Image 1 (cartoon, rainbow, N blue to C red):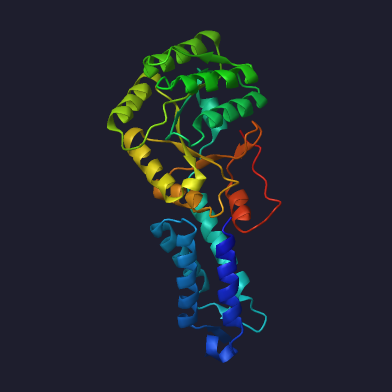
Image 2 (image 1 turned 60 degrees about the vertical axis):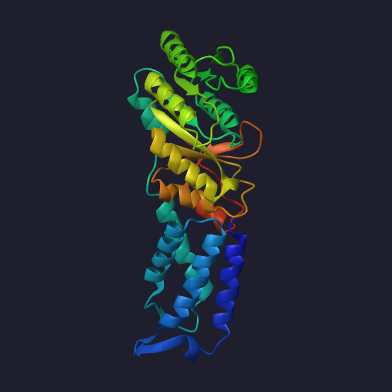
Amino acid sequence: MFRGLREKLFSVSSEVKSKPIEDITEVVDESGRRLKDSVLDDILHELELSLLEADVAMTVAEELTKKVKDALSGKRIDKDFDLEEAVKLALKVAVKDVLSEKTLSMTDKMKAKSGPLVIMFVGINGGGKTTAIAKLAYRMQKHGLSCVLAAGDTFRAGAIEQLTLHSEKLGCKIIKHQEGSDPAAVAFDAVEHAKARKKDVVLIDTAGRMQTNTNLMDEMKKIKRVAKPDIVFFVGDALAGSDAVEQARRFNDAVGIDGVILTKIDADAKGGAALSIAKTIGKPIVYISHGQEYAEFGRFDADWMVARIFGDPKAKSSPEL
């Protein structure tokens, strides 16, 4: 992730460091020298361009660049000063600040709920929504929770079959109606079943729809009114970059989302979607998904993401629910 950004920073900082100290610094007073504002501005310009190339939204790139500038402006330097490391450290702090602004504790949600925790999943076709539902069910079962799946994507028979297959592999109950039936009725029946059988969690699939389809968006609003979910997750494809940010914004405007599940995170060579979604809609990224195995799904953690962005191969996600 952000490989091009790291390479660009290394190139710029190496070029700066190759110049005589008099060209890149100025004397402050007897206490020493500081980086010239003109030199810092050049570095920050390259940093902002690199962030944009990594699919970071303009407003987010500007904020990150400003945070780095605030951290380095007027900074005293000496002969041992490592410009590349200083920029990288300032950027790490800035990125973590963006990713840590909002959080969502599933454990707290479970504790606060007397009946089943109802979770609704929204997003466009191809984003990995149904697979994310199955992975979250697997994770919850590993934490000792019982799950009911609701096949609310009644527009495609294939979607019902896919979720049914997952339910069989996971050994959990699925509530489904025939293709073309009312998805809100499926969600209602799933919640009622969970209440009657004292199940812990209801996971509601919905039809993948483009965020510009008004009729289907209205249908999704109906599902929300009927099922009264405690959490609405937007499932977004990290490879979609800026498109994923716009999708998240539209879904948030339409039904209100509480958190994000970001899929295909391992294949995302740029990584800007995570930063941009978190900042643009002000909702936390709660889980990240990669691969096809149920276990290839984890709790999003800002430290983990920062480590991934800056190339730490030992980065691990949190075991928290």
